Image (tube, rainbow, N blue to C red; front, side, top):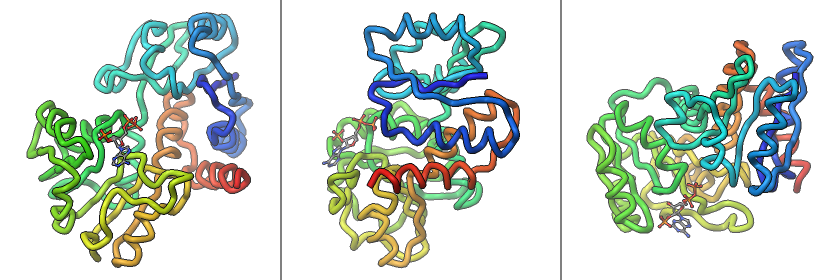
Length: 272
Ligand code: ATR
């Protein structure tokens, strides 16, 4: 069976290495391939896949929203987020799922333990932050969303349940009282590796600092967190767990996250 990544561009993706390593470890005769698809060819490509021996696909930038109209049905995860990153082919029916948020939270709970009475500060209010916030809000005791543009954080907080507030990054001293700090902005991503979305002085021992940026593997924020004695979790684990969740949808089997992480890391390291 063939699996694909639909995106534009897809050249530097770690997904083929990650999934092919897991297929191999489980002795599955499947293959995961890149399928670079320009926006104007998306419909035609999906039609081609329907007629192909396709097990499923991942969808990435810039197609995550546009792909919705080519699906036969949407799973609850995709409806809730309003975007699809995983396609399941169930006997010719294409079902759109979203594993970005569930994968992101799974990576967090694997490291931290289950969420319950936690105070969480989430940095950012874009697509990635919105997806994570929807999962976090009903599970934690306090969620503070801080964004460069405060009104976006406030607007997002108003749509969410639980004890959720939104504010500007200028309110970042609240980070000091948080159990978990999550960076869901793009700040610190290569080539701007010396940047951090927050000042190091608010980080402390006893916190977990989770950065969804995975290039570089260790961001400035994570280095600051380590210096402050905090625990850290890198964004490559989020990428791996969205892949783990997709793999489970496609095969009903549980892949080894460590195998997928090592394969992804090799690709990233080779790119430098
Ligand atoms: P994604 O889909 O990856 O979340 P996005 O929707 O473009 O991408 O969101 C990017 C996020 O990073 C936003 O929260 C953005 O803040 P604004 O809403 O104020 O634009 C944040 N961001 C990007 N560059 C930033 C910077 N230099 N400083 C602070 N926040 C930044």
